Amino acid sequence: MDRPSSPSRDARPATPKPGPAGAPAETGWLPDCVYTGEKFEPGMAFFADGQGRITRFSREPADLAAARRLAGQAALPGLVNTHSHAFHRTWRGRTEVRGRGDRDPLAPWREAHDAVAGRLTPEQLHDVARMTFMEMLLAGITCVGEFHYLHQQPDGAPWPEPNLLAQTILRAAHEVGIRIALLNCAWSRGSYRPGSEPAPARFATGGIERFVRETEVLHRWASTNFPADEAWIGVAAAGLGQVPLNELKALGNFAHSQRFRLHVPLATTAAENAACQAEFGRTPAALLAEHGLIDKRFTAIDAAHLTADEIKLLGAARATVCVCPLTAASLGQPAAPVEALLAAGAGLAVGTDSQGQIDLLKEARHLEYDLRSRHARRPGLSADPATTWWHAATVTGARSLGATGGALEVGRPADFFTVNLFEPSLAGTDPASLLANVVFALERRAIRDVWIGARQRVANGRHQLHGAIVGRFVDTQTQLWPRP
Image (cartoon, rainbow, N blue to C red; front, side):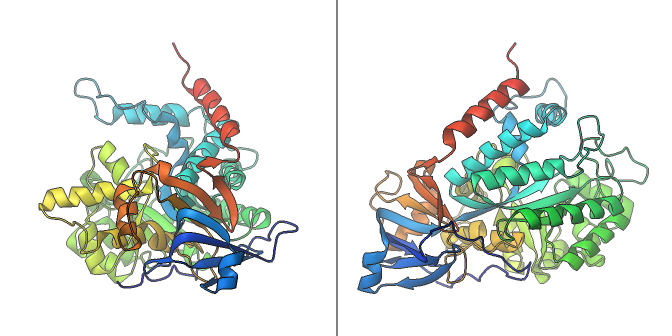
């Protein structure tokens, strides 16, 4: 089995978070087995220093005796959720109906989206984000890319602090304990065509100069308040229709100058592709590539309607494509051509997008089984789909976000989760088949403990703030969705 490549370290220097006062110089764990990137290794302990970084793996008897025994458990690197909209969690289960008559079939979803976006307060956003991020931790996700486009007050007026809602998201992630790349999203018009309708008032970021200025302020604020590998900033565009070409080029130049990641929804629908062709005479990926925006720090979101030439462009640039299969299926949309993208050399990452479910492995499972059904063969994505999908949910996701995790290796943070090997969905497996069992059969209840930077965030399937977070979220839902 080939060893997956490591996540990129070129995003920015990582400043480890200091360990808590009085913490031991080194902490060690001895599970029944640990996934090292090649295979599950039994009888191996691993250790982290006071800053939460892995220092070594060992089979020495003295080290095995000194490590904390995790009996009946396997340890795996924390999952990386590359694409998330935290506030979408609020309408889970509330749009699973058909639109009336000949209305847009997505009308119920759009109506719920606009209703929540139109009235969500900073306090409510804080409570919703904590709930969403806690649910991610419970699913073994230790790092999230939050695609943030909720910027202004409900009437479109700016907040006294322009980055108030972004700061709210970052504080929520810190309180829950998850690592976060906040991808600040530019949105300056409604759709393709010069002179089209303006951007929705709450999402509008104004001209690119204002957006860049406010993102620089947000970057400084995050750098001041959080360690660099706990919370950091990237940039995004809501889409090629929502950001004019001259602003897209300026956004790309800004991202390159700051070594920020750049994420853009691309080729999401055939109609968007046609509109892009009509305005620019180019397909979306070809347009971005022509202006130097596609490189190894670029991630295309969705990318369902790529041409063969666009697939080659993304592959040649070693760009990443993030797929969110459960959201796409829920909305009745196709998935990206992942087989062709991988063959061309592009990276593949996975996200939870609209939070209909928060389970990154179910996302992978869904698309893998869809490939098998469409091609009437198994496996679907590759000869070893468990490793390919695991790589997408860890290593490639970390590279897409510029995160320091994604793998359990010396020098990387001790971000990992453990699974109960005697839980029914995993019982009876062995180290050789365990990864396939995890990818294709794991039930979330099998996830027992979650550690981030060697600090335990989930113990026995429960977060330390579980009750308070759930209670506040229930209160917020009651406010957002009052009963008749």
